[in-house]
Image (cartoon, rainbow, N blue to C red; front, side, top):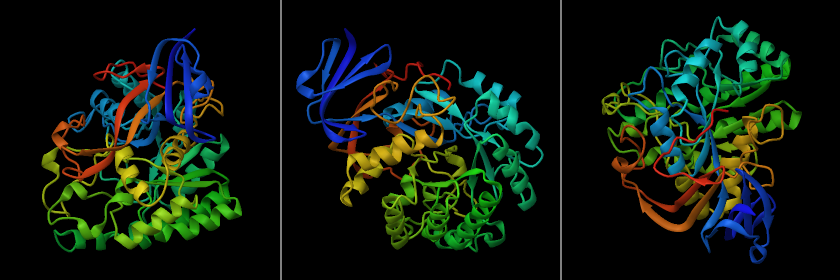
Length: 440
């Protein structure tokens, strides 16, 4: 007898989309059957035409707890994740105090998260000047990889790496086959905005700054053999060097974010600093190129870069406002709205937002240290992290109704296609943010 069987005429499986019945026992997927041959179970759910997806994996989330919990925290961030169909997040090492740059700081972070998470949580470590000797110990303590900046991070306690430090960090991480994830903007090409408007802000962070930084990472990855990942690609200028590096066999991957795929510089209202992020949202033509890079596999993942702050930091001046976008709860619907308009299917969205991020963070069950069960796909043996997603339903975003701690998002007032109806974590429906998430 199974604990749960969920049937859908639109189950998104690794082999494609179609009718299926997914059986669950003890939190794991124990079988995938024809829809008309569903086995007996203590609980049965028939979704009809509502799609059944694997739980999404968001590998780029700034939870900010402890230290800046008034910006965001584990309880509210993971409630937002569950409401948006995300069943696993990977927390970034900065904006919390202390930053996760040594094992003792990881222990503080895990203590802050324990018993408070509605979904599963894993952690990135940080690579900053002076902590190279801490990296192996952090890796052995369970972080999924190491984040670094090549330009100022926005917080003093997480400084960037210079060229020599970057090479040394890459060499060290390569020695234990770890992963380096990089905020890639060249500081020499960045400037202070010439005014308070969006055009001045966009001009202060040109696409060439991203490309030059990406080229530097590629060169050092080629030299050291390290696995490297480029975070939040906003400029299509990065696609050519990334594609060429992959053809050469350089171990490099890259991601983009919902806001780069669904928003455009031309539509940013005056003073609307809820649209500010670094690197910035660029123009419509650039957005089209990012979609082509995603379809071609040059960009692997779509993840939120959920980076919230208190509303008072979003002053109506793009030169002075905090740079970060809150979208953890909305990424699936936002991406599906645009993807479906462009002719992509749910299988594409699952590949970009579940399978690839799970693989990036080593949570897909296919490598050592993968956690309690595989993530990112509906497959026998994986954790029964599942999402009922109604792809034809519409929702109009009300920032005040979101679970994020602070009601600030550029999607406020937008009508999005696709609504999450239910999220299951290891076969149990997530209700009211009940803290059943595990620390991976």
